[in-house]
Every structure is written in C-alpha cells, then in structure tokens.
Image (cartoon, rainbow, N blue to C red; front, side, top):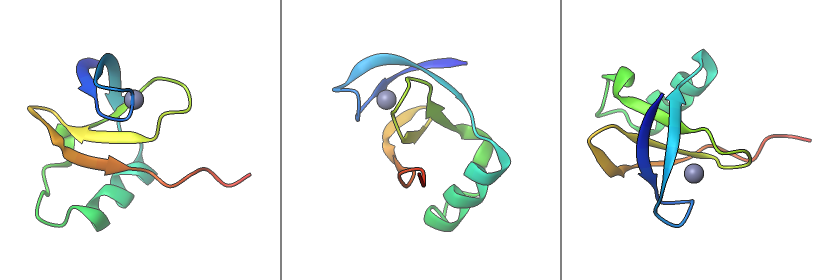
Length: 68
Ligand SMILES: [Zn+2]
C-alpha cells in the first residue's frame, strides 16, 4: 500500500493498493504510453474508482462503475 492524494476523494490523502490482473488490463488499454504498470495504484477507499500513477497523481483515471 502507498499513500497518495486522491483526486476523486477531494485531494485527500488515501491508501492505494496494487492493481489486480483485470485492472491492469484496463489500464493498459487506456494508458498505452505507460507500460510500466507496476507504477499504477488504485485508491483503496470503498466506492472510489480512481487509479493513478505513483509520483504523478495527475496521471490516472477512473475504472468503470462495477456492474450490478
Ligand atoms: Zn479515492
């Protein structure tokens, strides 16, 4: 786990966790220029869909809403 300021959580400091295999696939499709996937983490706060790169919190995006 790493701590970063999460854009989706109002810029507050949040814990981020490593991406799962499925999440890595999604990020690879949306961030084709960044192949070093190990540097992306996901916000661990419940309900938050934000992922972003360690060292550059502006480089990131949101995972799609989970299907219900
Ligand atoms: Zn968040």
